[in-house]
Image (tube, rainbow, N blue to C red; front, side):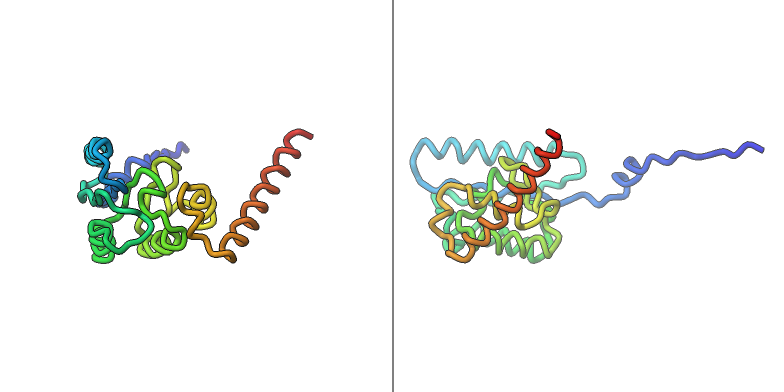
Length: 182
């Protein structure tokens, strides 16, 4: 008695039934220096092309603040509008060049990403190769610590907590290397 087995390609089946993701980009330059205008415009063009070229992604727009510091949310009108659109369920993924492009204040960064993560909104930090939905906040915390300009916003207890996390990961990494060596 021969049994017939039917092979089902799960990946093809999943992509056929998945709802397209609404994806936006957040771009920012902090100064009005003329040479940064070209950099700002190239960010806008790059992210629009990138989002439009991905299968399963709907272009949900670009939110961009020109000549605005990333240390505070106040005054960043497009950043605030993006968060409102996230709250309204209009965005599934936010793409940004780096952690420091989104928010330069450590406390604000962790707070914003946590809130977005609760709403199942992924933030993709391209430079650091981090998808917030796939990483723990502790990982993001470690990256935020190394971002220029953010350290001055650390609170002392937060810095101590970060040092402990880093030491734990460093110990784990050294132990793993030692086991591989043996």
